[in-house]
Length: 187
Image (cartoon, rainbow, N blue to C red; front, side, top):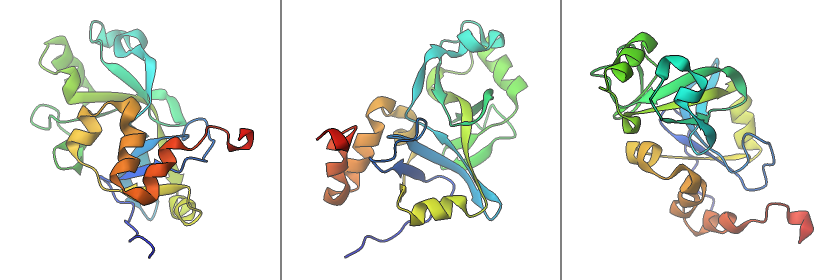
């Protein structure tokens, strides 16, 4: 029996299939922040880069938060998700307790005043974007699996283990993908 297809809505995740070889999306978990007839926007949540926020943005000096590779679009821009709508206005709700974006001046001030912790905000260089119907086509081509998620999984999980853990949660049909060889032609 074919599994029930979950629609790609804001607050859900895309899990790349193991044979997807794209530099950005290989073994990626993408949090969908927006999905509409105009297109889709998301952030890769399991690929931290080897720099801290204070290394790439001087206005955040001393804030040693990790930075994640959000995707291949606008890699010269910084994006963020957070759990503090009570402090950061203008954020867009993604799922219960999690917001995308908001007033960056407020974020700078909160960090400067030590009122925002590293476990309450995540920063991303670039984002993942799809034009109208592009993501639907990729889903039909079986490049992604859509799954439900929650705040704990997005913010609290070890990002380096997230792809495999998420697949295992989907059940036996997907759990064997965790051991898929990096290059199956070498087997």
